Image (tube, rainbow, N blue to C red; front, side, top):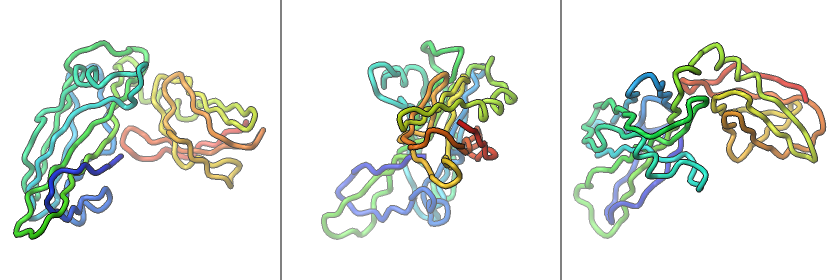
Amino acid sequence: IRMFFISYLLLLFPISSFANEAKSQGGIYLGTTRVVFDSIGQAAVFTANNSSSNDTWLIRSWVSPYVKTAKEVSEDDAIKNFIITPPLYRLDPNSSVQLRINRTGGILPEDRESVYYINVLAIPPKPKDTKGSVIQFALNTQIKLFYRPHRINDEREIVKAYSNINLKSRDGILTLNNPSPYYLTLTNIVLNKTITLSPGDPMIPPFGNISIEAKATHGTLSYQVINDFGGKTDQVSKSF
């Protein structure tokens, strides 16, 4: 999950919906950390929740590209491929809304997954009895949306992919290759049981690779993978 603030109004609002505190302190939080969209369906759903006992929030939801380079999907393509309904919704205290991601068109690869961001912008209520000039913020939460062609939506193959990553070390760089059609997000990456590695983006694209600086010509690498439900797989250990 990624969260960032957006300047919204010149009014004060003591925002309390930080990612791990929204549920307990009162604020907007999502019911999942990722959504997998099987291509056989026309829609996928997830839930936005307001745990505040007093505040009503306005939420705006949309799909955007995961990366923004000329070779990747554009903002317009993301909007053409998917829309979220309702796009704008008033979320009352202690209530929830089921948001629906609709496939609206466009051509996507059928031999591998595609990835996007789901954005849920929480716009705070107008504060009461505020004196002076102060700043109010809105909070945008981003989670990943994986579009998975139905013909590769095989749980056995997905589980196998977790341990099928290939390793190659050269000139102080460790390359992790993913021969599967799935995006694999790694966590708890440990070299030779002692050194924790932190790549810029730990998600290996389908049939692609990532490179990590690691000054070791041989050894072992252990890691876990984030599964479809946002949990962690068992630890995998591989030699190189």
